[in-house]
Image 1 (cartoon, rainbow, N blue to C red):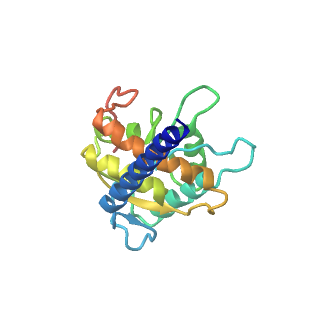
Image 2: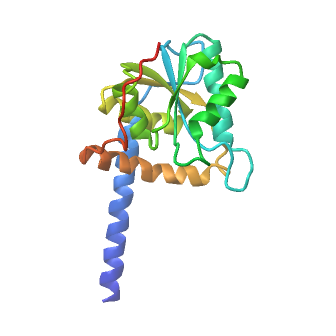
Length: 211
């Protein structure tokens, strides 16, 4: 009996590892050469989409993922590789508002307020990509996040009819980013579940034109 249980457990584990590997491989292969680290060679797009994250960690310390995304968006804007910034993030409560927080820091960094648009319903990467196309009317965009996140976002965008490239914000060290990197493997598997089930954004709403 114990041998059967162990065999069943190992079989499930191997199956799960295989699924994770295939999801990873598929996304990485489909988004090859779609992300950039230099403002000199990245193609220009009208709009850059900065994907939201918390400004601070649960322990109160600054979140490096957040800081580096702000810097990346500013670098793109100053290099004239984007004209507008669409901030897409979670606005789950009156105490937590990623888009407004990011907007304030972008303005402090020198991006004019009128060049910044907010998507308050970017609860997930899928929501951000679908809403960028259907609510904000984008046909193409530059996604601004860390490379691992950009790859996943670009893959979703491709499947949802949005032509996207990515500008890679500086990544966090392997030790500091271990939890996020592990979570990314599960998120990539979830991408295919969402596509198979035709998962839709939590909200759509009125169309907003970026001009």
